[in-house]
Amino acid sequence: MSQEAIMIAVDNSDFMRNGDYIPNRLQAQIDAFNYFTNAKKRMNVENTCGLVTLANYQVVCTLTTDMSKLHSKITLVDLSGNINFCTTVRVSQLALRHRQSRNQKPRIVVFVGSPINEEEAELVKLAKKLKKEKVNIDVISFGESEENQHKLTAFIDTINGKDGAGSHLVTIPAGSSLQESLKTSPILMNEESGNLGAVGFGMEEIDDPDLLYALRVSMEDQRMQQERAGITDDVNAMGQADGVVGTSEEDMLREAMAASLSDNMGGEVDFSSMTEDEQIAYATRMSLQDESAAGANYGEVMDTAGGDEPQKEQFDVVDNPDLIGAVLEGMDQDEEKQNSTPKDD
Image (cartoon, rainbow, N blue to C red):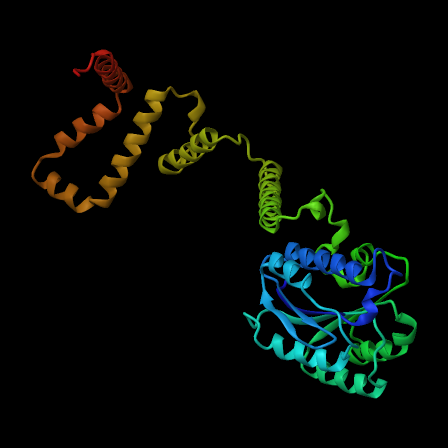
């Protein structure tokens, strides 16, 4: 999932004292703010959030990955005066230029619970500037939504343009829960997991971002293992369809050795009917024949010197499976004696 740098503007005007949202507009906004920041942290542990106020356009907290710091800062915000929407958005835009990484996508989220005093033309002009700089913005309108609806709709439509959909306007009527409405809103939608409130497996209830990240990594590893297992099954199925008999490593090794002996001897070899000693004898003989072919010049010198008898004797030994079996049996007995002899401390 892509990284985001998000400046969140909260409404701290005198209108936030109204009780049309339980218990009042301010506390409902704080609960929604805390949920939103935790949700963004769960989406990507490298997401950063900052806090700015609408009434006095003050940056209360710069971009940070520490959401607990933001939660403590918002409780210290004082209520006073009226909001200044356009100036606060410009301040947020400047704060986003100091984000930690250019890989983070800039976004502004604005909680508006008071009347917007600026004219619609001023909002449209600001929207065009945000669109040019590729900064998306989400607006949560509550409290004075009817008065602000037309201005905010024009503002968001200008940023998105005809084909755009990166910015959103969410209007929450009085009496509703801001937090619950935010859970099902397009603001917390993403291209990979759909709505955050419907992630599944109960992970949306996990408040520890590190734990959630570890769980997702584990699930991804498990998915990759299942994919690899599926590829292995497909390969085995293809091998059986081609007439490959025997899937164990030992069977495949025997078949490869039999094929090699058959090629070297110029005929078919019934390798399965041979004893282990006979198999070793044949393998040794083939190896010696390869070395003999590679050293043909050396053999010619030996023939000239009349020294072909030692070589013949060598192959006579190889052609005697009983002798090789006796040698192998003697080696096994020596190994058993060595293993049964107690070692000195």
